[in-house]
Image (cartoon, rainbow, N blue to C red; front, side, top):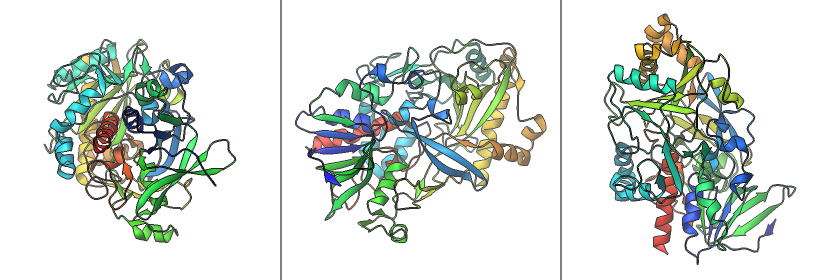
Length: 515
């Protein structure tokens, strides 16, 4: 293993939702050298991105054979094995997800600020939320920005299925929510997306491509970090393996390391570097640098099922995005007034999302129905000292009566929407569940169990308070931060893509302020 000649001030591990934002902002200081190490490919211009990663009518991460993702075996319940995916490409998961770019709710920031202080209050983060975006619908106002790297536009609701969804929600008495990024009452509305003119504009495109000509910024693709080097309680560099170099590894020294590898990879890298629960590290023969019981142990995510309906007649292809509208509502227990149930409309058949095609003649169309409560039921455990062996992931979905009740409530709401006269104009009926199954709790639970999926919203594996401080600094290790959704104490009530970018912005600002 050779030592690389370059000694950057900061190494950023991962060029995804958080890492791209953080690296770009840090490199705005010309006196700070920044090296970004991304395990996936790093195109240098927009035209070099594969077309399927740019077409916002597709979801690349849903395709089983996509080369742009890293796969993790998991169990959603003890009897439900699953494969979860994370982006492995410039832009990370913002390159392979659905383009959904919805902010967390004020309720989330109230909860997180209990661990992170005033910096994590809604009022504390609002300037960053405004500065990271160019909102093409609202421009600059008290809630939105018009000069940020992420271009945001809401989905077009003129598709006949989207019109039916809107009218069905109105028929059932759900309020309109025209701007889901403005703390309005949860209800039906278009989906804010990092999509413009049909292009999925990921964080690599928004933040890093415009910055690549800066002499103090280097972005390397095909560079997999194997571990962080920690000497005398300080992170001093990383061991990295370059693609196509026959397994050759090099040591890259630096002044500070920032882990932005995502909520699954970041805690694994901490474990491999000797930061984690002593018992787990001892079991695998990993020398313990810092006994950190909260690192890589628990996580939060959101269970999801698909409910499909048959179009009454052929419908037009979606224009611009696979998404139609979205309905958010609080579950009946009233614990989350910001809305902990989500019904998200796909205008592309599930078989099309999986197969990478927009049109599938005769196929039903899906609703993605999820419970977005901020619980921490997931359990993570490192299985090997080999970085190529993924950790054990047990999501423990639907483990309590309350979990099951919320999921049934969400499914029944989606079914009620389909039963309205408004939806009857375009729908020939739902595919499943059949009426007897829908009406009986135990039968519906069985139906849900057999079709259970996940929203891919993993958070809280290196949580603020117990594992890191409000600015991502790992307790007990100098020169080491985590800046991705790992640090959220719990999952937000909305998908976390916009929050991941916020994390990169907030921590970059803290680092720049510290000098």
